[in-house]
Image (cartoon, rainbow, N blue to C red; front, side):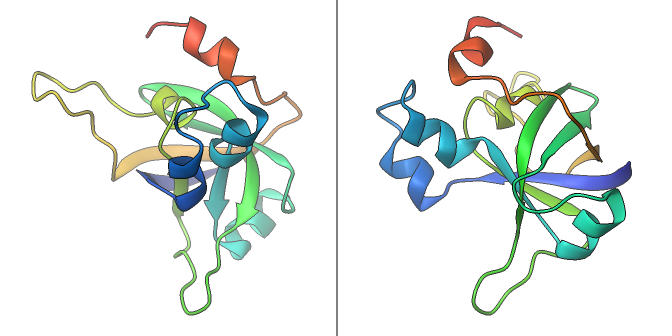
Length: 127
């Protein structure tokens, strides 16, 4: 298990499927986290393996994905989750502001054999 900073954000795939929240395409667009390749190595996971993200607000199981774009690699110790029901499991309350904390959330990530829950199961649970 390693300590990380969790950030969330929009992605093109998440945005293209946002109106189809119960579809397989939407699940694929939001049920992963991007990680630095060295962090993946430290916890012993490869791309596509399952990881559990834990914060003080909750936990969620996701698929690990190596975070590299053409010119930029996600820094070590940072995990990115696309906005959606999976990210919502680990973000904070709004504390009256109307907007939850979506960036800079202290958390932990570890390898797991637990299953990634379907979207339907996540949205049935009200936090």
